[in-house]
Structure formats: C-alpha cells, structure tokens
Image (cartoon, rainbow, N blue to C red; front, side):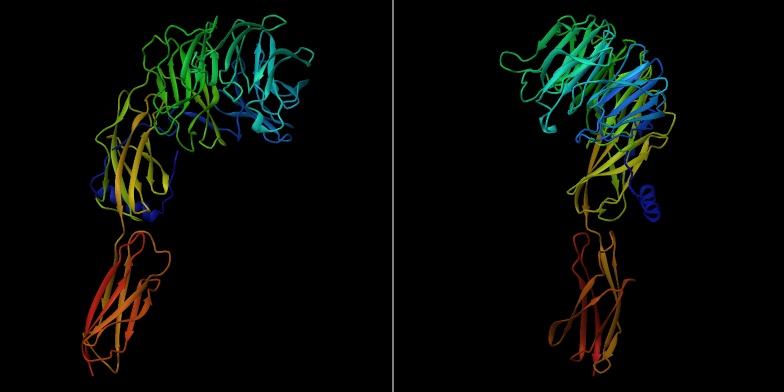
Length: 576
C-alpha cells in the first residue's frame, strides 16, 4: 500500500487538525492492507513467465523469464504453501515455462536451448534435454505422461508475437521432436485430466481470428479432438486469449478473454449453456483457474482502486452465490493479477496468485485460503474535510466512515487514499479505522486549485472491497503577513528606522522574501530600496526623509504561486 512521509511536527499538527477541525468524516474498514490474503511474499523477480504448484510436496514454483538478451540468466523461486521461500534455482540462460510430471517428482523448465529438469525432493538438476532454440519464451505442459513445450525463434523480441511457433514433445531419452502443430504467435499450453492438452493462440497481426484446440495426448501422436475459431461472419467476436483452464473433471474449459470469461464444452469447444457473470466494470481479464475440488473458478483481472482484481466465483455458473472478491492496490500487494498468474492446490484449499505492479517490473505471491463466506462493506455519509478552507502547504484532514457487515475484523481495518491534482495522482498511504468505523486521512496539499481525494477499502478475507468514495477540495493560497514597528516621530537629520517581521504560512518559501518599500510624503510617492527578510523573518527599513510632516512607509510582498501577498504601513511625524 502507500505510505506518505511526515515529520513529527506535521503529524502532530495534522492530528490536532483531525481532532479539532470540522467537516471530514471518513469511516474505516477492516485491515485491508493486502486485501486478498494474509500471506504475501515479495518475489525476487522483475519479469514473470510461469507458475506451477506441486501439491504432493506442497511447493510453489515461479519462473522469471528474463528475456531480452540471449545471455540473461534465469531464476525459479521455490516457496512452500505458507509463502516461505525454500530455495532459488538459477540458470545460465533465461527460463520460460514450467511443468511437473504426474507425481510431482520432476520439474521441467523451458530454457533457451533445451529443457531443464530438477529433482523436486533435492532441487538438484537432472540430465537436461535438447530442444529447438527459443528466443521468445516457451509455454510448457505435462499431458499423457509426456512434457510438451513450444519453441519460437525470432531475430528480435518485437517479432515474437507474429513469428511461427512450434509445438514440440520432450522424449524419454531427453531429445525432442516436432508434433507437426504450429502457428504464428506465442502459443499457450494447458494440461487437463484424461490426458488432454489444450493449446490457445493469442491474437496477433497474423491471426485476426485466433484458435483454441483440444488434443488427446494419450498416444504417441497428438490427436486433435476439438478446435474452434470464434469470429462470426462479420469478423466480430474473435478470441483475445489471456489464459485458459480445464475444469477438474475435464468436461469444461474456461477462457480468460479480453471480452470476459468464456465457458466452453471440452468435447467440441461449443459454448456452455450458462455463462459466468461479467467481470466488474473497469476490469480486464488476465487469468483463470478452477479449484481442484471443483468448487471455485478463480478469475484474475487488472483493475484500479477497489474494483476487484480477483474473483472466486462458483465453478457452476448457474450458482447465483456472490463471488468472493479481492482487490490489490499498492506497494505491499501489487496492482493486478499477472497474466496466467493463478494456480490452485489439488484439494482446493489454497489459491496461489501472482500479482504485479502497473509497470510490470515487480511481483508478489499471494496465498489465498478462501473463507466460508464474505460480507459487504460500504462507505456511508460521504467525505468531509477540515479546515473548511484548504490551504496549500498546511495540514488538511479528510474524514469519513466505513460500515462492515458480518463479523468484526480481527485487526483494525485500514483504508487507502490518493490525492489527484493538476500534477497527477499522489498516494497518501493507509489509514487505520477506529472502532466506530470512522477514519481520518491526513494530508498536506502542495498545489493551489482543485484536489480530489479518493478513499478505498480493498477488502479482506471476510469482507468484499467497498466502492471508492471521492471528495473534491478547493485548495487556496496560504496567507502571509507583515508587521511593522516604527517610531511615532523622527527627524530629517537622524533618519527613520522601521523594524518588522514577515511571516508566510503553508509551504516554506524556496528563498528569502524580498519586500518592496514605498515612501509617501507631501512631495509625493516614491519607491525606496527593497529589503530582504532575514532567516528568522525580521527585516529593517532605514531612510532619510526628504521633507517634514507626516510620512507614510508602505512595505509589500507580492506573493507567489502558493502564498497570498501582504502589505503593512506605518506613519511617522518627521521634524526638521
């Protein structure tokens, strides 16, 4: 999540403003730092290619593809089911694609020039197999007692999406052979029960109507049992594949498509009679996975704010039970589910989700244990702020209230907040919710104009995310002030000395203020030399008056982008 640095002085001032100021009431929700899961591991990778789960040994494998240069090293991070990293496997070349054999004793990893194998009990490398050179990243699957992998060779990474990709078979003697199936683009593989193998084609410039195909992998030769392209006669409705998964019994295929979730009959890839509900508005599908017990269909997405990035829906689309919803937002959780970043344990007790940030260069592993039920959460009463006039560079408190249905959370809930102004969106970190549901977001806006505050509750294991609440504040300039101390009477011979103090509230000035000085007497008005304010805010004006009688000295500061100007005057009776 997001954190904002504050000095001790500012924190105290903001707290005082929160306690004594009026107007801002933001209610809090359950501990929603990570929203979806209590167990989160920061992955030691900067790119992501594959996730696979070994339920026999309770291990999770995550591969860092590290494509881009042929000599890049690869990395496979190994975790247990509680999110603890067990070991890290490094390779001399990039890694892309992972698969486990039927009993989980051997891990296969797609290397640049071959297929690497590891003993999952000792993590020691086994004899590697040869393979065609791959420069774009392999997909791997273990089906019918054999590992399959894709091979794509391109001279440039920019050509990977359209280059011809081959489907190859890794043989028992650690050699390989072509299956004869190939097409353009980075083909994706998925194994399923009953010796089935699923292959999908992402949309690309050479495939305006991509395919999905099911194969029987039980024999020596792959036999296609079903195939489908999805565009209609007008070219509409083409598949935009993000991920795919077999149901535990192998009768259904779920597809994460840019347009939503497709549920297909495995036998002929026809549409199943009832479809799953659409993802929430603003979500883009990224991953899909059935739980091993057949209870859930996990659907991953990319969404902002409290819009869910992960939904655990009943596997049966005819079941109207509300899905379990989780949102990810910020530096403790990532911002979205990574493409193909969902896998379940065999018994369905845990879902492993890989999330990434918006830039796609940081990754997290979440271990989600689905609760028996989830309850709603909502913000009530809108947001308010105090003080009533927000000022640039001065403390501002935004207040609200969050209501939670169901049981109270075990830990104090938290909300996250952002401020959006002319300079973009700024993360304000997390704020704890009080026992009565109220919370106060503390900030110091640093730009004059409209600032919109958005408060989110991302949910927790037993509460769904709440719809974001927003509040727009007009931020004005901070005040400045000039105070003068002048003699009541002075003479032309000895001169006039006026001392003063200058104060600018809000954000500190980038440099010392320079004040203009005017003198008005019976001969008219003239501008004297300007004065620069000292570090402690004091200044001195010295003048030799030019005539007798009342003389008025006016000291002014014009202000700047964040501060109002100020003026002060003093009148002196000048004698000869």
